[in-house]
Amino acid sequence: MILDIAREQVLEQGIGLTEAQTLEVLQLPDALVDDALELAHEVRMRHCGPEVEVEGIVSIKTGGCPEDCHFCSQSGRFETPVRAARLDIPSLVEAARETAETGATEFCIVAAVRGPDARLMAQVGEAVEAIHDAVEINVACSLGILTREQAEELRDLGVHRYNHNLEAARSYFPHVVTTHTWEERWATLQLIREHDMEVCCGGIVGMGESVEQRAELAAQLGELEPDEVPLNFLDPRPGTPFAGLEPLDGRDALRAIAAFRLALPRTTLRFAGGRELTLGDLGTREGMLGGINAVIVGNYLTTLGRDPGEDLALLAELSMPVKALSETI
Ligand code: SF4
Image (cartoon, rainbow, N blue to C red; front, side, top):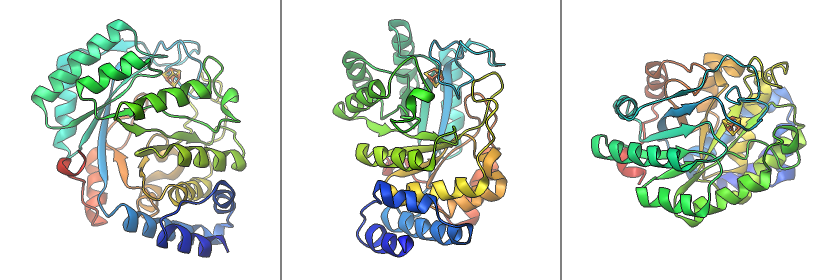
């Protein structure tokens, strides 16, 4: 049985599941989902420890993106309620300060762009320096596809981690995005690694992909070995091509959490967008006891998240300490 194999291979030996094994977990009957989550939790405790990494994100440039990622309400190609906006440096520093006050160790500056232009790089440079001067927190960035020079520049600024998601399995990516390729994303991820920034790379489950493709995504992430994997569940946004998709079934979302943890035993696995929709409050608890070990506090980029106080209270109740800044550097 796959869970017995996983106990020996993943828990005892620390070797992540293969693509075929991950598929078996994704196909477990309902009656075994709780067992899979329990094992995923044991794996997380053994290989990552009880700490939970808390992060905040802020958008330096919202909306008006030229790309056509079909899940994204920030694309300028779709009629969505998101309006283009930019944030100034003092507001970014304030947001970083508020994030640090929750105990968060990572503050991620995000821009809705294909990749940064010179103006955005200059603004980000100014913002990173201002935050480093004023707040004790690691700064991460998510600015799309990078050139080698831009990766160097971000490293020299002291950017700690860079987020760039694969979003979907390589075989499904052309159904999700047509304005750039999976390979372009992969190339940026290699640049981040070469420039000694931590790699944050995840995807979205529930975009109409098959379970086989869900296992394929987990395997491709396993090959990349990111420091952190944000696991999103599609929240179908009005006006996007995926607006009409049904949110993922809660049991399937839990199967995905367990399967991704068993495929990636050592990574920081973060609950990202869509968890409120697919899982509700109860699911947040189940996820935290099913292999997840990082959360975003406060708002996501275009949808409201939960109150940070609620998340922090849940972590306290579960005796999961918030990871300290000194342990993340
Ligand atoms: S996911 Fe990023 S690149 Fe794609 S449309 Fe949204 S903001 Fe643009």
